[in-house]
Amino acid sequence: MTDLQEKIKVMPKAELHRHLEGCVRVGTVVDMARRHGLKLPTFDPAGLEDVYKLRAPGASLLEVLGRFELAQASFASYEAVERITYEALEDAYNKENIRLLELRYSPDFMLKEKRLDWQKAHDIINSTAEKFEKASNMVCGVILIASRSYGMGSALKTAAFAVSNKKTVIGFDLADNEADYPSSLYTEVARGLAAAGLPLTVHSGEEGHYSRVRETIEELRPRRIGHGVKAADDASGALMELIKERGITVETNPWSNYLTRAVPSVEAHPLKRFINAGLRCSIGADDPEILDTHLNKEYALAVGRMGLSLEDIQYTLKCAVEGSFLTPDKKQQAAKELGVK
Image (cartoon, rainbow, N blue to C red; front, side):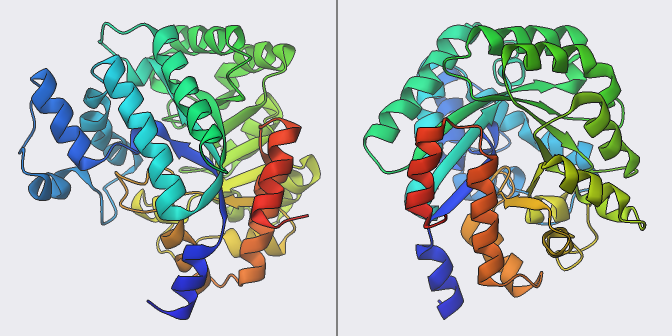
């Protein structure tokens, strides 16, 4: 291990953009399939890794999203929900030294076609996170996701569910296929969340024209944007200036963006440009198990191939704390753990 890798490994970290459904270990996929009679291409963990994990760019974002079916099927019982949540927290804490973790999930996606109650599953996820917090020095929060491709009815239902669980939900995310389901469709959802005091983050600018990011900002007024790489395509710089003026935090996910072809190469990722332009940015792993990544790898890529300094990494940690949807007391604890002011 190089000196840089060692420094990164021991560095306390923050993660604002991590999908629970993307945290299912290969061994857990196999165990859940055996326990619940689910079909797998192979029950050999080593062989399944080649099918389950994406290690080279996919044909498109939609092709990559299709890889989540095995993880989705693994949420086959309440026991599975608890185990997968605990393992996601355990990996973040022990393998990546994460001290601030916001974990997000889509109840309609995660529990699709299963006879599991949304409320009971959510209570299990939240209680597991609370127990882990008490046994560690990591602070956690849960964000709910509406999957665009599931239709407006699903988005409204998920938003209503989030509002009814305000005590255990720190924010809301609009994710999935932006190309076919643009942000302008969801103004009613955003207004309802704002009225309830739930902060919003939106997957935007992961594909397509940069104007979609502007549409997201103007129509939905989010506090954060997930990915947002296409904002750098505006040669005038006006879109990046708008993000800066609004104080929006961009949740960047470099390796994910390379695998989904949002950027042509890791080196072409605009994170350094965002930082130089004064934007608030965090670094995330997105779906660590499926994308075969983690924050140690993301930070190493950022420094080794994307031109960031360790001071830039520290800046992203400061932005993560400031942009977090967690309560002020948890943010204060995270700042202390991360060594940011």
